[in-house]
Image 1 (cartoon, rainbow, N blue to C red):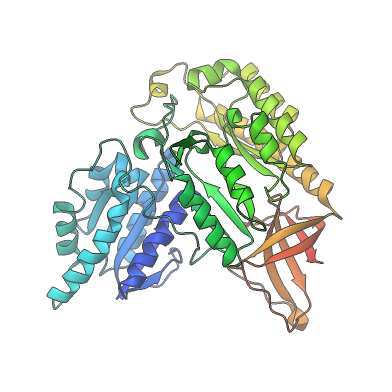
Image 2: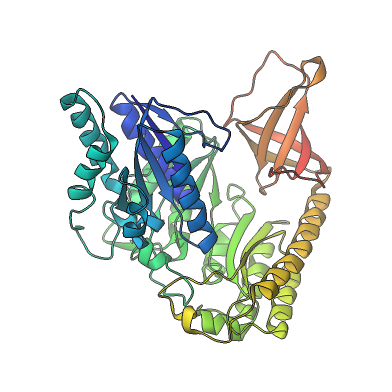
Amino acid sequence: MKVHFETTGCRLNQIESESAARIFLDKSFSVSLSSFTAKSAVDSDIILCVLNTCAVTQKAEQKNRRIIRLLLEKCPRAAVLVTGCYAQLSPENIESIDKRIAALPGLLKSRIEDVAAELSAFIAEKSEFCAADFTAILKAGICARAPEKSGFSENAFKLSTDSFLAHSRSSIKIQDGCNNACSYCTIHIARGHSVSLDARTVIDRVKQLESAGQSEVVFTGVNIGQYRGAYNSGYIDFAHLLKLCLEETSSICFRISSLYPEVADDFFCDVIRDCRVRPHFHISVQSGSDSVLKRMARAYTADDVRVACRKLSDAKKNPFLACDIITGFPGETDSDFEDTLSLCRDCGFAWVHIFPFSERPGTPACAMKPKIPQSVSGERARVLGEWAALSKIRYIESCIGNTYSAVLETVKRPAVYADGMEMYHAVTENFLHCKIIRKPSDKKIQPGSAVFVRIISAVLSKKGGEIDCTAEIV
């Protein structure tokens, strides 16, 4: 019996999906993690599909619905369990698509362990699997049971594996939820209030990864700046957690998934001077206009972002700085957008993740005026995207000839080269995604291995991939 997993959205979702997959493996189910496409063959061996969803934009929700319909088509015998943020916000809409679907709200996602037990019992009792009957049981029981604590993720760290089935780099989920209420965002509803994994558990898991030979761990969370982990008789913030992890380990390196500008205070920047903290920081910015930031209910100004980036650049040599930007927020003027461009230039962001504004039902931003036409927000995204692409090339070119530590990743679709040349993918300490071609060697290098690479050239034309440059192992 096979269980299939699909995941959309953030790295947290990836961690949770792979943790859930391990639960089903432990119950003797076979597990599939490769995404279906329109060209995929029908698979009648799959009896349960689990879709872990994102709901950050309308486009994300549309993608979820498209995947749901694809799963119904490609897995004709399967029940479809939809969980994650979209299932938290719109469970009725999801279940109305088909009777084979059950929605497990994102705050109850940890109950997937109960779903696995229920599926085992259902199979044992029935001579033939009926997807609609199984989803009816889920909807009446596991999916309907009241949460332990309203507004909080239930057993938030149960689905938190350190090692992946489909990814090469280890991650630890240290925080979930968000206490902010940004005017455009539903994540504080979909993920609940902020909760933190206690510091000693984090430290012990890092030490276990180091003992197992892992070279890098990524700390992930919805808002790491709100980390408040229990430690001894009190609580510590993220900077102090990172300091303790560095003190109690000797070789493993640390990558931080994302930061709010206010995290980059003097103490934090002193901690990250350690060479084992990767020189890669993704900053949640959203706009370079103070008036737009105020309407977004963000707790910082554009100058706060500039100061944070300057401190990070002082603490680490030539760091890879990236950010998120929303274009076309209600009321955003041409002048506001120019302020955003100026901020990106001033901070020297090596990459910008750009979102044209997407109205989320029920948020204060829905009522804000004037609305910006999609054509305008799209054009602003295009202009910023062109700048970001050139900025990334400039950053890569500044790295050519330099040697960096890197972690090898799995090559999903390896090309075939003449003379048996081997291809590897690697992510450098400063987050450059490299393609490495080398002559065959008796010594095979496994995904997850630490290597040193020299950057050779930027990849100027990318077709559907995320490779930034070519490199060689040194």
